[in-house]
Image (cartoon, rainbow, N blue to C red; front, side, top):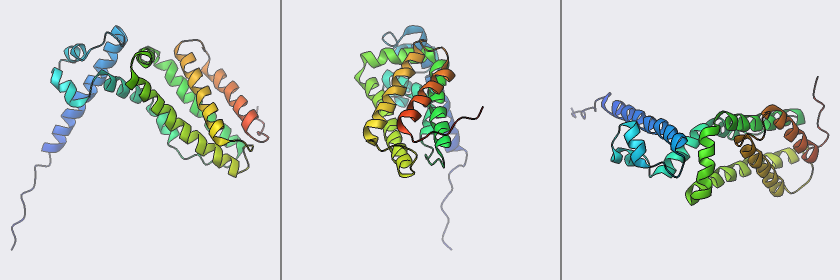
Length: 215
């Protein structure tokens, strides 16, 4: 009878993985506080490691540098927005499509409102770092692809007017992007009103005979 291979300890790998996740989250949480208190330019890996009480090398074992850390922090902030982007756009009516667009913008702008301190730091980084600018462009590129796909779907269903979906998607993404930073900069205090106005603009311009909202 063949001797069975010795099984690895069922607890060793999960515990190691859990410790790694705890350390990673500690670094991210600490980095967020340091970024907010020091600003982008003055934040260093040394300050983050000191505040988190972990080794300098430990930080680099989890992240490539401070830009990588900040991009992960922002990804965590925008997690709910990413989730909505990844939900398949398949409304059965114009009214349902309108609700989806509204909820997407409301989620984005609510996150901007709730996370102003770290997003203001991120805004600083966009002006100073090519890698951070590339990170934001990557987010917008993903948003653009989803928007274009959604417009094509709406056109095939007869919900949307006949226009170039590439230009329409780009215009929509630029619109959402511009007002995202308006909210971060506290120039738009009422995000629900903002989303209502922008949704009406989009649907009056792009869609066929929007269904009237119920009182």
